[in-house]
Image (tube, rainbow, N blue to C red):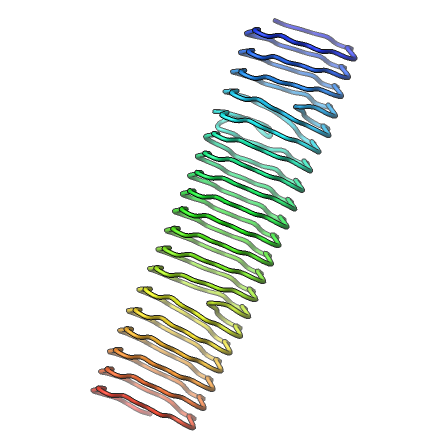
Length: 414
């Protein structure tokens, strides 16, 4: 069927059972369109002002509705949109400039929604101000929603996802079961994100102010959250993680079971970090003020890394530190400028320790076999090194030192 209705002002069209249709309605002002069961449809409705469109069961659809102001489905200049396309198999849709949109595409298999065309789903909704999106069962999704101000997104069962939401101010995102995901949310102000079961993920949230993130079961994750002010992050079961959180002010981080972690949190002010079961850790947290784990400029720190096998840690400028690294096998530790330190390294086998400028130190290194220790400028120190076999110790300027080295075989004291 080919239908042309140029100049129509108002129209209600129902074509149940039509298998193929090409429709052009230039200049139509108001329209209610129902095409249940249509198999193939090419639709152009340029200039329509109001449209309610239901296309359940359509197999292939290319839709262009430039200039529509209000619609269950819209394009350029659309102000309000509610769209339901259940069971559609293939679709290409352009909706530039939409101001309000509610979109439900349950069980869609392939969708190019321009957004920008369906390969799984490539979704672009530039300029949308408010949007509620539900894509349960979608297999592939690339989502771009630049300028969106508020958004609630549910994509359960999505297998592949690339998301870009620059400028979003508020967002609640649930992507259970997603296997691969690349997410960019620059400028987001508030975000609640749940991505249970994701296997691989690259996440960029520059400018996010508050973030609650749950990524249980994720296998691989690269996360960048520059300028985030407050964040609660739970990544239980993550196997590999590269995390950059420059400028974050408050962070509660739980990464139980992570196997490899590269963590950069420059400028973080407060942080509680728990990494039980981590096997390898490279950590850089310059300028952090308070942290369960910190680096340069840190003022207070409490660190627990039980079971870690290898650790390289630099904490220059830390003022107060309580450190527990039970079971560590190899460790290189530099804590220049620390003022107070309580250090427990039970079970450490090899240790190179430099604590220049530390004012007060309580150190317990039972069972250490080899150790090189430099503590220049320390004023008070209590040191217990039972079982150490070889040790080179430099403690210039120390004023008081109760030293117990039972079982030490060789020692050089300068």
